[in-house]
Image 1 (cartoon, rainbow, N blue to C red):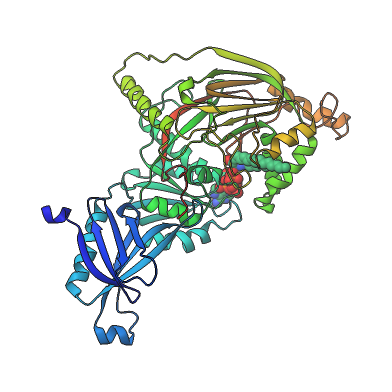
Image 2: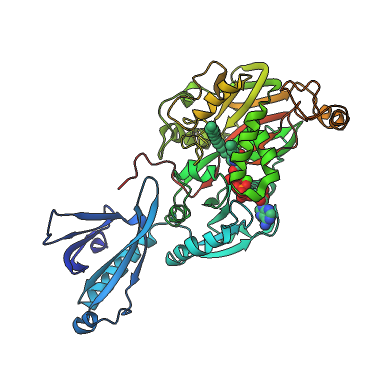
Length: 524
Ligand SMILES: CCCCCCCCCCCCC/C=C/[C@@H](O)[C@H](COP(=O)(O)O)NC(=O)CCCCC
Ligand SMILES: Nc1ncnc2c1ncn2[C@@H]1O[C@H](COP(=O)(O)OP(=O)(O)O)[C@@H](O)[C@H]1O
Ligand SMILES: [Ca+2]
C-alpha cells in the first residue's frame, strides 16, 4: 500500500536523450527532464487528470536500433494546451532496455488513470448531418472517434434522420448504461439533446413541464458538445473555442461544468428551454430570415443580419422582471465568469440546500424581490443565460453573464437610429462596452415576462388582408405596410418560438456539461 504512494523514479530515454522520469501519485503528475541538457534544463509535467492513455509501443518500427538494442517502449498520450483555449493530443514515448521496468511504468500509469472516476466509459452520440456546413459526420469520424477509441471509450452512435430524432430517442432509450450524451452539431442540436434529457428526467419524476413554477429535477448525465454547427455559441462560451478536438479532450478527461437553463412558457403551456440566447426583435428577425437561406450554411446569419439591420424594425411591448440579488454580481461587472467562478460556486451550495428543502417539503425562504415594469418600443430584447460568446462576438452579448449562478442578463435595446444601433452592434466585436449607450439597459434577473402590445392573433389575421392592399415597402412604423412586422418572433437558441408573449424563468444548474468554463490563461 505504502509503495503505491511513493513516486516511481527511473532513467528513461526520450528521443535519444536520457531523462529522469517521475510518476508521483501524491501530486499526482508525470514529469520528465533531460539529465544532460544541451541548453537550459526543461522539465515537462503532465497532471494525471490530463493523460488520455498509455500504450505499449509495439515493435512497429522494426528499425535496426530497436532490433540491435532490444529496446522496450511505452507512449503516453496527453492533453496539451496549444493556442488560447485550444487543446491538442500530444504524445511522448519513453524507452528503456528493461522490459520489466517498462511494464511497471505502464501498470503504474494505468492504475492512476483508473482512479480518475469522473471519466466517461460509455457514451451515447447523436450526430446532426444537416447542421452548419453539413460536416458533422466527417468531423466526428475523423477527429473525435479516434480519440475516444484511444481513451478506451465505447460509443453508440446515431446519425439523426430528421429534426427531433435525438430528442424523441432520449425519451425511449435506456440511459442507465451511459456516462454521458454527446451532441455533434450546433446549438439547435444541443438544444434537442437537452430537451430530450430534461424532458425525460421530468417525465420519470412525474413533474409537469407546463407548470412554470414547478422546481425541475436536475439531469445527472453530462452532455458533451462536438461543435459542427453555424454559431456553436454554447460550446464556445463553455470551453472558450469551437474546436472538435478540444471538446473531445474535455469529454475524455471527464470535465464538469454546471449550467443554468431557462424555461419558456406561454399561458401556462411549456414552449421550450433555452441556454444561450432568447432574442426578440433583431435576433428573432435574423433567425426568421436566415432559415430561408439554410443552403448558405453559417453565412446565412451574416446575410440575414445585414438585411435585418437595414430593415430597422422596432417592436412595442411590456417587459416585467424581478432583479436578482446583488451578491450574484452585475452585468456591468468587469470580471467575467471563469473556471471555478466563485459566484457560480456559491450558487451550487444554495441550489443544493434548495433541493434538500424541497425534498423534505420545507418552506421556501427566498425573497423574490419587487417586479419592475418597462413599457416601450424596442429594437431588441435579449435574454442571455450565458455570455453568448462565439466566433462572431468573442466576448459575447453579455460578457459578464454567468454559466451557473441562476441568473439571466436581460438586455433592452430601445428604439434608436440606424447609426446608434450599428454603434451598439459593432461593440459586440470590439473592446468597447455595448451597454454604455443611452438607449441600452441591462438587468440581471431570475424571471421575466414579455407581452407584445399587439395581440398575437392580429399578426396572423391581418397579414393576408394587409398584404393584399398595401405594397411591401415598409417605413418602419408598420401602420400601413404589408410586412408582418407588428410582432417579432423569439429566437430561442436558434429555434423559433410559436408565441411572442412569454414567461421566462431560470433554473439554476439544471444540467451538466463535459466542460470546465473559460480558463483564465491557458496558453502554454
Ligand atoms: C457590424 C458588425 C455587427 C456584428 C454583430 C455581431 C453580433 C453577434 C452576436 C451573436 C450572438 C449569438 C448568440 C447565439 C445564438 C445561437 O444559439 C443561435 C443558434 O446557433 P446555431 O444553432 O449554432 O446556429 N445563433 C444565432 O441566432 C445567430 C445570430 C447571428 C446574428 C448575426
Ligand atoms: N437529420 C436531420 N435532418 C434535418 N434536420 C435535423 C436533423 N437532425 C437535426 N436536425 C435539426 O437541424 C436544426 C439545425 O441544427 P443545428 O445543429 O442547430 O445546426 P445549425 O447550427 O446549422 O443551425 C435543428 O433544428 C435540429 O433539430
Ligand atoms: Ca441552429
